[in-house]
Image 1: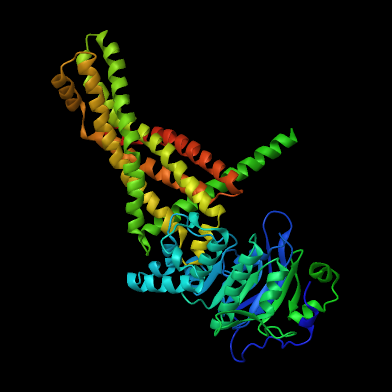
Image 2: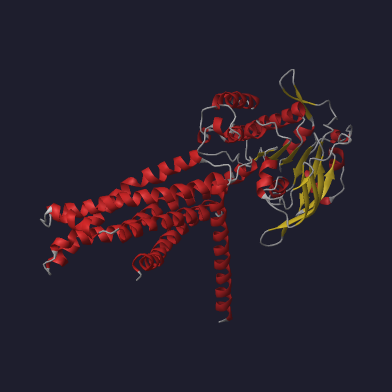
Amino acid sequence: MPDQALLQSETEPQPQPGQQPVVVFENVCVRFEGPPVLEDVSFQVAPAETRILLGPAGVGKSVLLKLANGLIRPDCGRIFLFGEDITTMPEDVLLKLRTRTGMVFQEGALFDSLTVRDNVGYQLMERHLPVDEIDQRVHEALRFVELDHTYAMLPASLSGGMRRRVAIARAIIDKPELLLYDSPTGGLDPVTSTTIDELIVKERDVYATPSILVTHRLQDAFTMVASRFDTDKGQMVPLPHGQTNSLTSFLVLHQGRLIFDGSTSALVSSDDPFLKEFLA
Amino acid sequence: MAFAFDNIDTLAKRMLLAMQEYTLFCWEAVANVLRAPHYWSDVMTQCDLIGVGSLPIVVLTGFFTGGVLALQSAASLAQFGAQAYTGRFVSLSMIRELAPVLTGLMVSGRNASGMASELGSMVVTEQIDAMRALGTDPMKKLVTPRILATVVMLFLLTIVSDTVGTAGGAVVAVFISHQNGTQYFTSAYQALGYDDIAQGLTKPLFFGFIIATVGCFFGMKTTGGTQGVGRSTTQAVVVSSVLIIFGDFILSRALLWLYSGI
């Protein structure tokens, strides 16, 4: 249940003027076999903005995330990434555009046969950067997720939470201009989930990277919206009572449609019966 | 009755669609040979896994097939007083037909299944999506190196099988059928023409392509979790084995016409 104090003080997300949205969905629909998975979905992600995508399991959240960087193509509507229309963009052009994004998959999706070092440094190795530079940046990324000691380990020897953190390190190593998190805390215990939340908040507040975060865990969503990363203390701290992060807002999917797009206060004060039940 | 026709109709459409997808898949994989980036280190790794890894089974299969051929042919030829032709029979059979086909089937059983299961697991655990999200084309990184490696290594493995099979036949001819070794090898050598060797070494190029493309195709098209991986693996072995036998017939006919005008 969201804290009623969230209603008290909040500023609406204010994208910086003159800057184009990072992601734009225009009347997007997609279907596989059977009924449509997504219908008429439209929203935007502004620079430095974090959009938390909520919804019950199986509603199409992961599909929406994959649409955002062209891993799946829409059946109708248009999608813009960094101002470029990716709806029908050829795959070889899209591959280059995707290097500007970072994606954290549901189960981490680490490459089994590669060490943590090679997983995290994968993009840099693909660009044939000097080995010393790769090593240095891998260590930096692993320190960010506090897993420097796993450098030489294989993914099979990591726990579920560690895999997600390595996946985050892999996603952020090349300083992406957009981060896509697919249920990064799904299936994890509360303590590990909080660690992951802290990393996401740290990325949001320290580097101001715009992101779309998929989750069905309300607890995590509201923790992130009501916290900030304190660089002096080196940890996530709660915002003063009643305040929320102004650049974090919500999207809610229900039965393939986007039924909510707005701020935290608008979400918790919504009269929509589904939202009331979902947030209860 | 209408239900049965509906099923045939659906099955035909699915098969046609699969053939279309396979053709496009093969075209893209082959076209990638000419497109950067090239993953030569992955080609070498696959050469090691496919070629060196398959060496023991190819050596064993070749040796004992040559041995069995010598055993059977010696007994039959002896009835006509033509036991001296054992070497000729073994070398021609091995080099023109058995070495390419048996090596292809062995490598198919070992590597088409391996490719389908490896790539299938990567698909269901989203590793292929992760690779695409990191800006790498999985066709270039995973499929094209496997095809190049299989074509090259199957060619070399077939030469190994030819040699070992002829040697296996020699061992049986000399130690079991008590023939003269020099006579065996002279007969084997004299029977061979360049057209026989060319026939025997053209086939593995096609078989290697079949094994790798079928294995990778079923792997990359895997759906349905771990059960789907198992299904893809089985399909890859069955389809590649059948295509090797079918392809052998077509190639034999074409090569005979090409080299001998038959």
